[in-house]
Image (cartoon, rainbow, N blue to C red; front, side, top):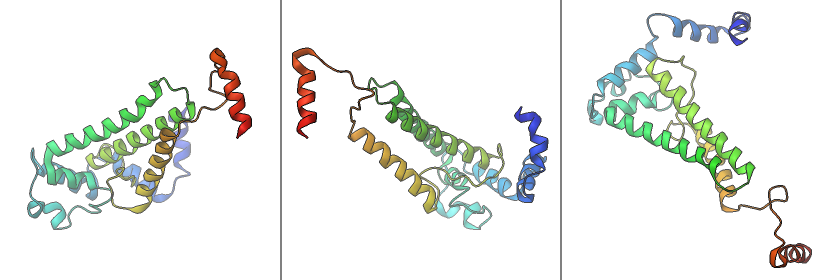
Length: 195
């Protein structure tokens, strides 16, 4: 259905959005992506020193601190640095994803952790694909890494909410199991009435 509706939706796009799609589908990548690919390729296996990073030093790589931070990072730290960054993002996403399989029955915590995990995975995947020329340049930041305040603040707020949910795991009425052994139910009732 999405494939059938895409020619219709194309007419409602703004001119700059149509240009992004045309640049992505053209044989030759646009200037930003070309310089990003050159920076990634020139990084080699171990990377370069800060003075030898010509793509960023001579401003060939535009927006090196925000949208194309991955290209600068790979030019600076090479293939090994890129693999380390991949491992960090995949590890963080999987760590948050595995909260789904915890024995805790707090579904709100599980859904928040899953949402943050998917958000980090999608943002990092799209940004890296964008710098490699595998996706159109859309300006999605690399989470917790790109320069810019709003993305960083948003992720910090999301992590603060998740940390609060992890620190104070409340037992709500919808997910608690009443315990009748040793007058547990009576103790819960007295505690509830006393507060």
